[in-house]
Length: 271
Image: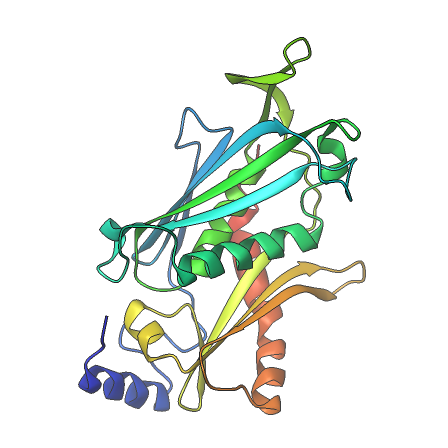
């Protein structure tokens, strides 16, 4: 979708004055709404609204053969479907680059954080483990699907239950859940994405701002062992232009504040 040049100029002019077209300041997130338990057939599910951006996430759990280099650990597979009904910019057909990149960023942040205790997903070492499938769907697009999808993924996982495993058949009984939650740790993997327009840094862009973005960087963070310590578990750079060293230091100064902001929203999500 091509953004009119006059809109690009207005966005830049507003940002130069420290504000945005929707009245927010550059480092303000839109209102975050989280709803869980939206699917009766999924092991866990969540809907997140970030302004007018809306995503659904479902967790499905099956039994699979473990990877040969991780014989005692469960697996995680993350997919993203950018549905045409959510925006004219998304077309039907196989997943495109944006869809694949979004899934990989969210997957890597969760996987590398230690949020899921994969060892506790092992049924029989080298033979059978639980495999978690994380499916992310765009319902309405107005920018920042990466952060919205990440929040919904965390909420869905926090409320997910393991399905009943039948030892005789070696399969799970679909629709029959146990009282056992998916084994998680307290290492909450929150993703914060920053965009650069002109000389300004902003978070949570609208669709128009995202079209104007010249550079993007996403950080997947968790709290460290020491008080006030933040760990970067994954990072992804996007768009064509660079961030200067000064801009990156500014982003790293901001990122903890943004992490805490989203962390507060997720505290009430419980299994």
